[in-house]
Length: 284
Image (cartoon, rainbow, N blue to C red):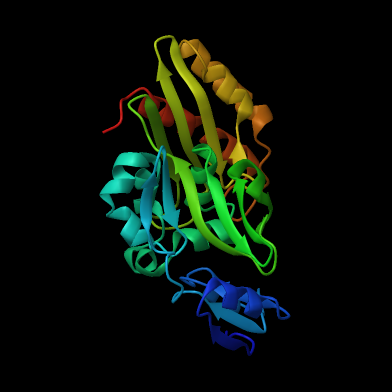
């Protein structure tokens, strides 16, 4: 199929982008790896695409104090090869090879993936697991939205029509940081049937600050809060069993073309076992 007719405009600055996005039925164009597919299938039909690729300052990866800031226009391939991300955001480094294929990672952007908010995508779950924030600029100024509050529903976020996602900010890893990532997909590069991104801190008494973010099991990435509680403190086979049992209440997937809800819950438990082993190991 071919897309419905649309206009195209290249934003010269954020202010220019706000002006263009204020028109009726406009959409931001960054990497376009998801947007082009929805256009061609006529799942979306904006009247205007606003290209933000020439706006300066959105392609940087910067350490600011205890946080790592990743610009919205940072390409997946750039993030995949970044030593700063490997050191300060090892969870994102683990997830990168699972995102699409090299051609997609060469064009796709960090901000585009977060803003599109596909519930089966890796990066929204990573942002949620890391307790990160989304930096947003709009006609009324700039604001930060925590990942727990950013994803509202299926392909629905806290972004307003004239907003531009400018960066994500995540706490930089410390020696106590532990992360884990795993997913099931039919082929490498396909969207996951079920995936899990996890982050925790290692304390003498065991794991703390555990955050488990599943993807592919709901309309948004999902925190498995009961399993998080079960894994907090002294680790052992009993706590793992309790965490897996808690998934029955934490997750409520639906049947889809990928798998049944029953299979998704089973796979969620298998992934949790794998990720727990990763959380037990120091990073780096």
